[in-house]
Structure formats: structure tokens, C-alpha cells
Length: 68
Image 1 (cartoon, rainbow, N blue to C red):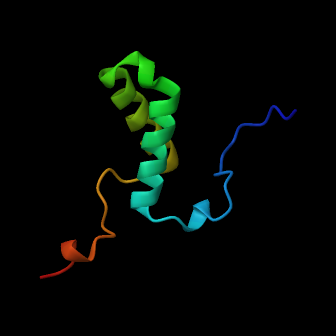
Image 2: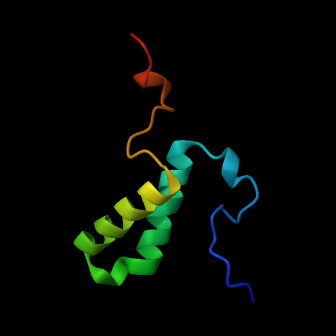
């Protein structure tokens, strides 16, 4: 068993995921790992994970949000 820290995603193709997909994955991970700790704690963990992984809280992937 390795003792190295994980610094990249484990799933194939995860580097190619959109910001929305990455954010959805983080939300799922935090819910699974910390769902029993309450909404405040989950929000704290999600903010920490977003900072660690450089995922934006709002997507710019939506074409409807493009230039007018």
C-alpha cells in the first residue's frame, strides 16, 4: 500500500471533465464522506475540496451564460 498523497483524480477521463462534472463529483464525495456531519460541516468540506482541486463554484460551461 502506498503512503503517497493523492494529487490527481483516479478515474480515467476525469482530467477531461467539465467544471460542472467535477463539481458534481466533489458534491457526491463530500455527501458520501461527511453527510452525517450536517449541512454546515459538509459546506466547509466542500469549500476545502474545491480550493484543493481548483474547481470553480459556478460554471462557465453553460452556453446560455455566454456573451450577449
